[in-house]
Image 1 (cartoon, one colour):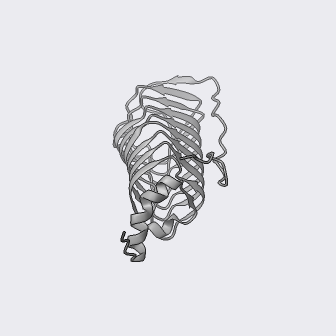
Image 2 (image 1 turned 45 degrees about the horizontal axis):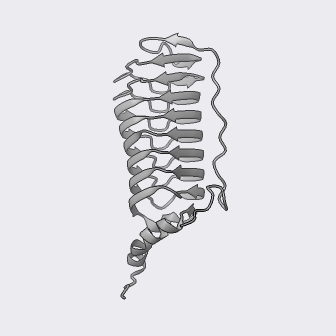
Image 3 (image 1 turned 135 degrees about the horizontal axis):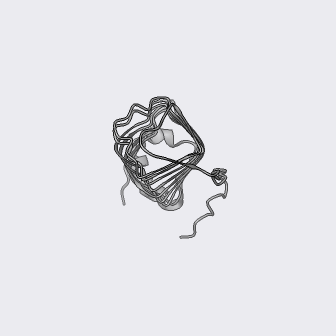
Length: 222
């Protein structure tokens, strides 16, 4: 079956590469609440109190954030690679001009946050809680997500390409403009009426047909 090109009829996310300046080497616990132009590699921030911390033009590679409190933190013009956190507490967090590569996250509590110009490539996230988030120009590629909660989220130019989403939860109060699911595999969707504003492909429509029929109370007989 022929596929439409990813940008046909639906506006794709607009993303520029993150270009970092020369970075100082960071070791141990971040000092102060504002880190700028610092590279952390293979460090453990597990269990740390980092509420409201700011990472600007930083690189975090192989850093453990398990159980750290990152509520209301801000990641700006930064690269995050191979992050590890079975439990990731980052509600109301801001991500702006950020590249996230190959994350390994269990329960990612990111509800109520703001994402602007963010690329997530690869990795596996067991539970991604984006309830009530605002996402503008966000691209997920080749990412495996066990459960994705978008209840009440506001999406503009958000695309999932070549991803796998086992369970997608949508709900009232959210909105979607140029939200693109084409090329992504999903197994179940809760909240079908909230799919308004999403773009899907023909293969996905065939998979959704039984769910749509059940939603409308239709009986399908041969």
